[in-house]
Image 1 (tube, rainbow, N blue to C red):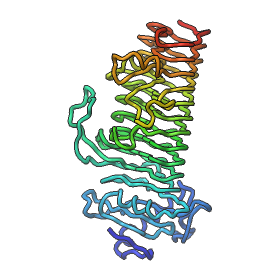
Image 2: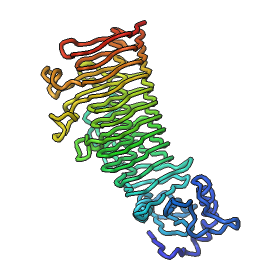
Image 3: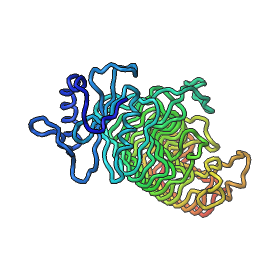
Length: 442
């Protein structure tokens, strides 16, 4: 690998890719709104939008043959268009160089419309924006194999394990407009994993071909995940869990979270899972083809689940009482020691309204799942409370349109339930103070 601190580059590199660089930079500049070249085609020193900070561009050296085996050299260009770093290794080396050189005051790392093959994660720090273009692809590598404790019928252990592609470990960070390809890996990885951050924006990305958890955030405040497409991850689509499960990051609390306008399809467990989250909104998402509840808060406090489409749930290893299109839950195995026994262990003050739920065994579910499935004490002592379920439409729920296996101080009203085994199923032994009214069944 080569780092050029004074902006100089070799004559052979200039002749091989100089024209391509001008084309790449011009197209990137147009997309990103950055005027990188003058009318004569000469690089402009310090080009950029006012207030954007430093700009680094990661691209490929056209036609360069080198030791990484795929005929690609990865280049980092600074804001003037000079080569600051090059590597014949894997793309994470180039992106890590760019991330490490973004100043404390902030800046942007722009990925060209190329395929970037990673050998390990690249980690972002404070005040950094990572953005791609139409055609930008980040591809993971297999790092080994692992045993999935719950393989599906189409899976056979051991499964291919991989690595995270982008780790966010700073405040005021954005990741946008990139396709993340797990390359068939199923365990121990995420496309994007944010941990201990304040201010995270993840938007307009696409994840394909695996990942244990596609988009993950843990111990974060001020998270927005919007307008992403998540296709066929292994365990979870958008979640506040972290792989590997049981790690120090897994099931840690986050707050002030918005998950909006995403499409999440083909998931073994939950499509969208805000676990251990407070002050949250799950709005206007499309969730299709899951194995556990398509949208599940377990536990969560002070949140809304509004205007989502939840369709086609085929239960996979269901918990007691079945899975649902939308779920409010207390689940003992989702609690770390610092949460267990506190108010943060229970789901409360949740509004579920205006959702369309179709072809799920249960449409909307509230329940308690103790670690010991035969224990009934927790269903009285640890039940969800202060929830509102109104104005939803549930169709084709073979077991129940709305089911409360446990709960306290809830409202179930003005819902429409069509073609359900039971319209509203409330277990009186483990519920209290549930108001019902104006629900319509067809």
